Length: 114
Image (cartoon, rainbow, N blue to C red; front, top):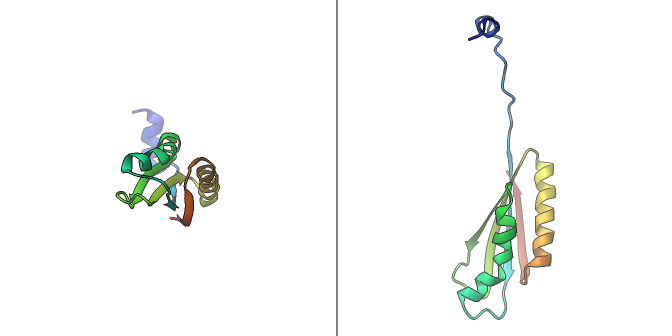
């Protein structure tokens, strides 16, 4: 241990680590599906959801309800960031991209910032 560090520790003035408070946002989308004859066809509709947004480092994507239903699906996207404003912007961006890319009608959207 260096002499300078010993002196700081002795004086009780050890360097403080910055406190980072993560913020979490949760976006839940309920979709209506048409023409899905089996679960394989349903999964194909949502391939982009997991393939594109599931690989983003600040997002987690999962089908959270209606896994066995062929006419609907519920997906949840969780976003992690340093501020609630950043999370809100990110979820807006993701929501818009999903609406453009996924071939299913969005019936309900629920958003929560934790």
